[in-house]
Amino acid sequence: MKKLILSLAVIATTGSLFAQRPVDGANPFSLEGQVSLNSASGNTFAAPTIRFRYFVMDNLSLRLGATFNSMSSKQNFYGSVAAPMNYEDSVGTVTTKSMAYNFSIGAAYHFSQLEKLSPYVGIDFVIGGAIDRQFGENSDNNTWIDEFQYETKTPGIMFGGNIVAGVDWYFAQNVYLGAEFGWGVSSVSYKDVTTSVTVAGTTTETVTPVTGSAASMLSLGHNFIGGLRLGWRF
Image 1 (tube, rainbow, N blue to C red):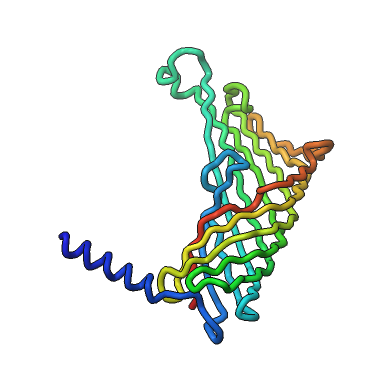
Image 2 (cartoon, rainbow, N blue to C red):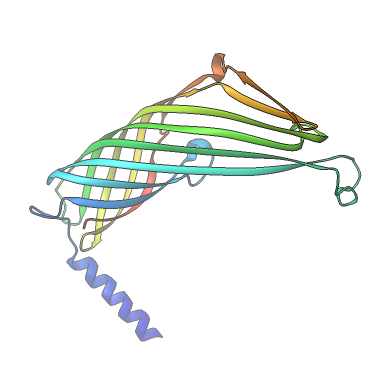
């Protein structure tokens, strides 16, 4: 076992010794995945990103990225203050689901002073969308109500721009680890809220405009990217 571990360590070290940043004439395409650090929202990790890069010159790359994220939570409402297990037929549920996506396009300038490291700076333009949905079954999100169902949908759209700085470390031939951090601005606008309510089998639907400060939100700061990346320049 010790010999196996030692052999793997030697192979890894050898690969690192011979790996180097791609030079003139290297393949211009690369594909990478990124796990974002989203401290602004209070979460340690945010949605993963897939990014495609094309080097139009040895030190200039075009970037295309895509991110998708979804979350879901569920809450129970009981028809009595007594122990819930005694009232299995008097349970209401409210499920909240959120889905968001964005696409980015940009460019980056790669410095070339070091053999294995490729530091860079760049800029991205981002467009995306989101939808928040909530489903209530025998509950109005406040208490238990028999034969009561509802659903709300709130769509939104986002535009933004981001200035980034990062580095690629080529630890093996054409394979790199990287870190990237960004600072930018984003504008999120929310559309009308659609609500459908079903009581005793009868459904009604209403549309409520989102107004005031709830209709749009402007963010400025490290709001997009701060992540660890693994890429392959194929």
